[in-house]
Image 1 (tube, rainbow, N blue to C red):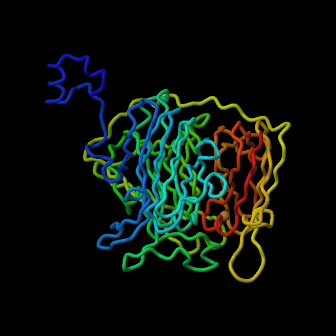
Image 2: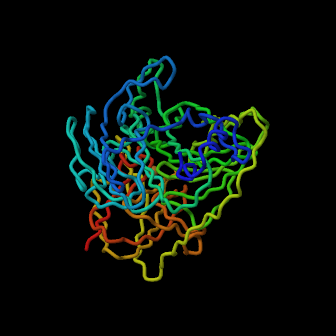
Image 3: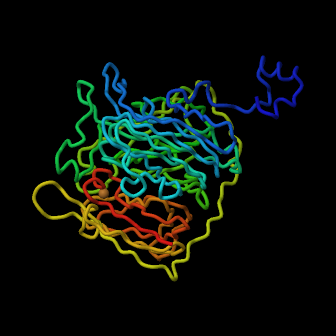
Length: 472
Ligand SMILES: [Cu+2]
């Protein structure tokens, strides 16, 4: 019961409970989010500003396809892993235990933490061996939706099911934006006998294209149904946790209001017909469903042209659906102002970093790289704390690459060389076929080794990765 309700006389409360109060605002249907509700990690620490959770990676047989048992790789026995919920400025402690048959680490995608907690094997920490454990301990300084996943053999491990959401809430944010859902989008390849498709399926071509599982998963479920009431806004916090698949979502006859991205709210909201999320990216969108009582609104995955053959012969797929309640449309409250003051970073005196995403020539296993060098041969770039840099990442291949920098947010630059509007903080940006992406970043006072890589994880594992050494 909210604190406001407790101020009402008891008789009024009883009347409201029995008959429904005339002035009561309309609400989503009972159990509207049941099909996609995420498990929340249990906070073991009583202190208000500390979230402490236990997290175990282990193989668990799950029924992802009805009637089949799939030995998925999981955090705490489910896909996705439990959602970790914190508030801006909280300290988050994760007591991690590895019960997988392989070494692993956890990377906290997007969080501006110290390099020691970033989960980069060999730089942040040693790999956590099978049977081993590691304690992650960091502060979450920025509101937004983040996520966690392994950084060892990451295409295979994330593809097998290892990912979860970390939501950092800001109590100062305007309330009443919409009823909120966190949706972790991914995919999975399952054979007819329920076993996982081999992470090496398709050989070099599989690596080059980036492996996509045939099953689209929304919070670990195939085509779940979200109940809705026409006219009532829902706020969807989306993350693309797939190892290679781009998500482009559309709802016939509807537009989305995008209010946030990787690093929290945008400078101002934008309307859009489609939401595009490369692997690693997040979006914070409002949707106001419209339609006849009882109608079904498919939320379609629409093929995104990310290069050679990416859309060829590929149909649209229903990723999930909204079912409207058997009630007339409701009138929602007007959308409160959603805006955020973001200072554009000054590119004037910025250092230049020029990178090319490359494919190596040669026989044998496919090798990708950055500036012609695979990650295992690359020398780290060096930068100084406090420095501002403009990165230009050029794509020399016939596939798009989602480029991710660990540890720091950046502002994507438009064609005019200035931060694109609306301003937003990002950590992953698409680099289109035969094109480039530019961004400006300022290295705040967190020295250490930071990774950057393509977030098509098959590409990262094939060498499209490098290191940035930020020194004091
Ligand atoms: Cu790539």
